[in-house]
Image (cartoon, rainbow, N blue to C red; front, side, top):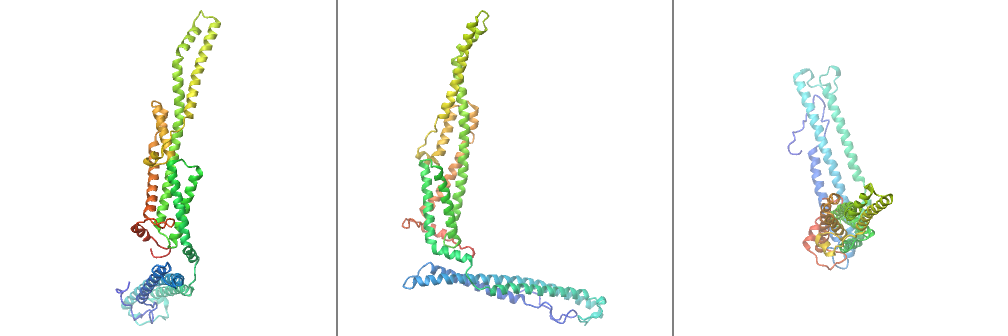
Length: 441
């Protein structure tokens, strides 16, 4: 905007005696640049005071007093910087609006001067022309008056905004109260979050060796939500890393997707189990039917023989019904036996090696067993389709979540185990993602 503007006209005849849209956008923008520098300086000073408030490099008799004073001053410096930033934003908008209005006024003047050059009768006429209906510049004067009125309206609007910022006394907002509370309790919050995080990790490890009860799995989810909430409070106040938020969300998402995959695997196993019971019933009934084929054939021969007595036919029918009942009983017993067959047990090493936990491994092994037991039954084979895909999805989610969680606990620092070895570069990288809400990002 500045540096390349056309010079403003000094002579406003024949439309006005002086500039109806006064102002200097370049001077305003120069002041904006100065205010930006002041705001940047205030934010840097606030950052330095924040380091003092955290006790970095501050030792001695008056260290606690200085830290407490630095915390309060740091808040007010940031609030002052925010006000400078809001004011120079309003000034920038006003400079842009003023330049546009001045450009429009200059255009109207040039058009009017062109008319005056063509019509000598209007040369030297002022804005008090008595015959407005005959004045060839009447339309230009009306347009210029509208631009001037718009300029006055915009000037009053931005002046009110700036006056509001100037009159707004610096005082702690509800956000600042929240931030100070989190700052005061940040150590305790971090410790509680770390305890919940390690507890959730232990539950995940226990799940490898055993199938946890429903309330235990629910506890793991609520602990993960609690960890995310605590990390979010710390990160928002500038006392924690947003990298922790990303890892917490990733853990919850993988947990949700893994749970969905586990439920789908459970549904496949249930459908396969139903199909396997039907297959067992059909197979046992067919085997029994082959075994009783001779009895049923003889009974049918007696029933169909012309010379057989009534008593002989009655006995033959009785024998045939007993054989058929035996077939049905054999099928029902086989179906009940299949229904009562428990899932095979996987060892904890199998679960760990294949990236899962015992319940998923047990269900998958049971599906494989039913496939092998009833290889020719289409119902069993079709019901078990998708088991491997759901198993792989569950394993992928479980493995990804475990790798991120274990890696963070292995390389990062811990409030619960403060003396454990850490990787400084890892903590430094996470620290670079520490930003308070509302600060420069």
